[in-house]
Length: 465
Image (cartoon, rainbow, N blue to C red):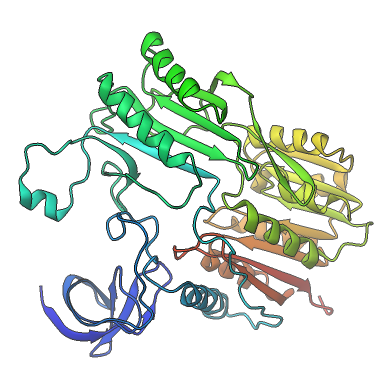
């Protein structure tokens, strides 16, 4: 493959990869930032673009900083730790605007500066670590050919490889005691010769370790095993219970499936409370072992406040909250609405939503479980009342075209669209642009040091439609 010499990086693409142009052709390169000048070894060549790897630096960007994490460059969880936070925000805001105008072909008004996070480390309330009996080796380790290298891992998947896991010794994204719990589990497993999982061979004992924390300091730990072996399970769980008194909720799950998804599994409470409680603006939310909850609690409060502001509620409106999850947004806006109808396809999440309404003594919410594409129809709308406002917060894939069509048919005066993927948000908003115009845009940085960005747009019905 060719070597491109002294190439200057000029931009960052939507997936966080750096962008350069050589002879009019776009080149994507990971782990670089604008201002870097490098030699690039081309790995893939397509008709319209190339992909490559930096093999030599000639100049370093003035926006570079020293990454805090020793795993930076191998672990794919925080690609932008080497980029000043102010520049991260700049590129995320640009990404949002580019997607809305380029993909959605939207005319924008009311664009606001991105809301940065006051906490750029230790902001996550949930991390999931994976056990593997064959860990990912760095290039230096492979060249060293050291027979003493321990082969198993407890850490994160290497980007693009479902069966490759990097052994993590430090992570700055979740507050204490996250690192201490992970390292203690690893040491105990080695001491007791507990086999780490091999996903290809479907063998081993330890599969996953999930740690959830609250801003008040409570901790939930969930250990996922591949098989039920009572004595060995109890041994590890008792070790965690006695070693970490801060663990207020301790669970285990037996997952014998070929994949790691847990939504259909049954958590077993070993000790402590069966849930955590998190608080946002005086509202309390119950977090169970399988609950969906925004992983950046501080920024989630800002996100919900924006959604409520954009909804423009007066106390009389019927609000539909699509993809309501555990009902957090529904509960947040309920005090200023006539009633809120929440819809969600995960049954367990709807159960959490009902509980969250009860915890907060909210009496004007209703929640329904089902495929929103099928649930949101004219019969449902006639029975529950035509929505004045629709709030939608779909998964990364965005909304099904049938859901978009039904929203257009329902004809609310305002649509508040929250998205973790500006490209699919732009696509969906473009489909609604004939009847709705974008009157406000607010990006929110939920995940510092990554390329991910949350965005909220307000679509208002055109007066002539």
